[in-house]
Amino acid sequence: MTKKVAILQSNYIPWKGYFDIINMVDEFILFDDMQYTKRDWRNRNIIKTAAGLKWLTIPVDSKGKYTQRICDTKTSDPSWTEKHWNTLVHNYSKAAYFENYETQLKELYTRCADEPFLSKINYEFIKFICDILNIPTRISWSMDYGVDESDSTLRLLRLCQEAGADHYLSGPAAKAYLDESIFEQQGVTISYMDYSGYKEYPQLFGSFEHGVTILDLIFNTGSMATQYMRSFT
Image (tube, rainbow, N blue to C red; front, side):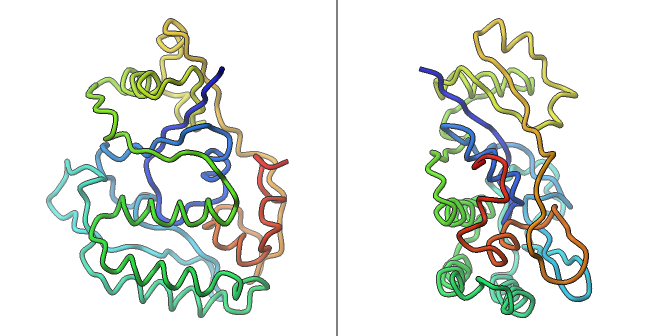
């Protein structure tokens, strides 16, 4: 029996493509014992507003901590949860399905004010959104497997092996550095996610944007959100 896994760093309220990858595998491994990178998707994402695209950014303690791992990165101001929630209400309260998710999402933001670790916050939001989309994929942590390899290709291969996988679904950017022959020698096949061909959906505020948080899709389409994703068609 084939087992397919994907391995990606945790992101904050990711875009729809991230959840398509989760839905296309049997196990999704959060690769959070990797180095935290600033100005990346780990602690921020994009929403639409009447004034254009806007970043929602979780403030983290990273000054001088150049080698800290994602899983060790902590928030620096718990008031971010209230600010983000108020921003979402201000910009999406008129979206067709916002009220369907308002109570649960507000509760999640409130709970996360007491969580200092970025990885755990990202996990809570990812799980929340998977539940909305009825994605049953097991979500685990790279730290659970105790793999210690400096070579990036070998590290991913070892994670696949430890998870009992014989198929690795990768993001398309990895084509530039993955040594596929090493995977093939160990009996693990590789495929790459294709992010092309997404349909547009009803959006607020001007011209259509694909690369925003999936909350935009959910607020605007509700239970029909999966009709605009690749892995459900």
